[in-house]
Length: 195
Image 1: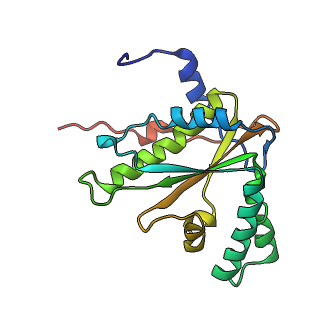
Image 2 (image 1 turned 60 degrees about the vertical axis):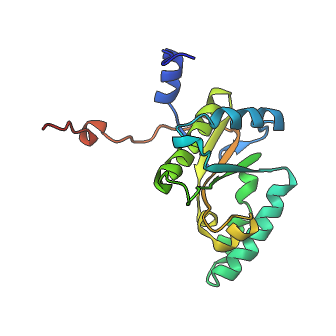
């Protein structure tokens, strides 16, 4: 175990990281064995006191369509003003990619480690999963949409009182290369503290 591993290739991968559009993913997606390996690697994140305050819920095959159908019913109950367009969009959510992973923030609220730190660890897992997938040849994107903030969806997925969805990671093969987008001028975000 080294304290640092200089890698121009890894730095270049991170420098050019780009999510694929939610409608830009097609088959094939990672197999169960490959996905299990991606999740194992993605879980190597900063994690104060080794709490692993997150978990994964994987949607593959027919479970994606089953989730979509249930989500439409939940949307009708939670939003009586949902339009046909909104419902149709929801009906296709999880079939936009071959594999969808719900990354669930699962903090131990009784632990002395602040919940905020535990949630940051979960966010790191989401980003690490995108990087790991990309480094393994898979395209992906991280989305939330209304389903990440729905009590009905939380109940459907079996979330506990203190859990919440950090995001849905969509993985598959890119239909085309993603376009670069405008990036912030990081120099305007940097300050140096002077005593």
